[in-house]
Length: 266
Image (cartoon, rainbow, N blue to C red; front, side):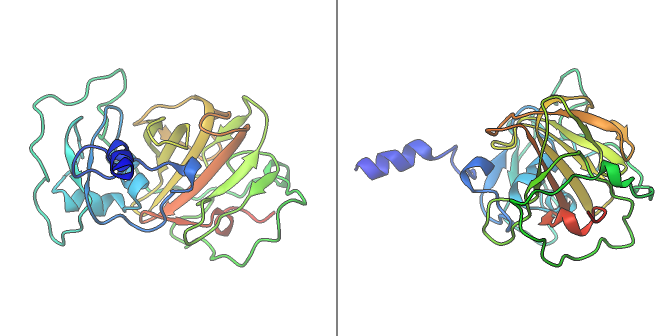
């Protein structure tokens, strides 16, 4: 009976999926295809797709959502894959989110990233001996080039596939150090709704690629803003973690990929 009580205490609202907590090793690589997510204030379609390993376009189609992809607190987003779904999983409240920033869930029309020259060697993080040699990675497709390092500092953790915790890379640095956009794009999430990521920014680069910047101490951009490669978007911090660092991810069609296959070589 004690076990049952504990399990009940850990469960969320009926039919929902527990919140992802990267700090506990539950950073999912596989797409979640069961249950539903109840939209909370400040969330966007992109942050929900990021949390559950979905491509944002597929998640929108799965729930019958169309541009501008407005979602509402209390709305249920189905995670059960339904090919050709054409209707929302639940009725929507009559009033969308109201805040100083654009309504949560409303993406901004963005143009594909414009190629940019690679950064000077001085702008690239220096590796430390604590990191082993990087395994072979797949080069970035020609459709999206011009990636730059999002911060300077020692590379202290690498991408790990399968069920491992780290779905990106970690770069150590100083509190308040600049965090920069790795490529041109549109800010589609800026907040701290994903447990284990702290204050986080997600940038949409084109129809396939997103990048994420976690553990910041201060966010300098808002949802809906267009950003350029190399533009400062945040200040490095330790929110959601135990030391000052930047956790950086690249997602291709909802799935994490090794950033070192896209960033300029060290």
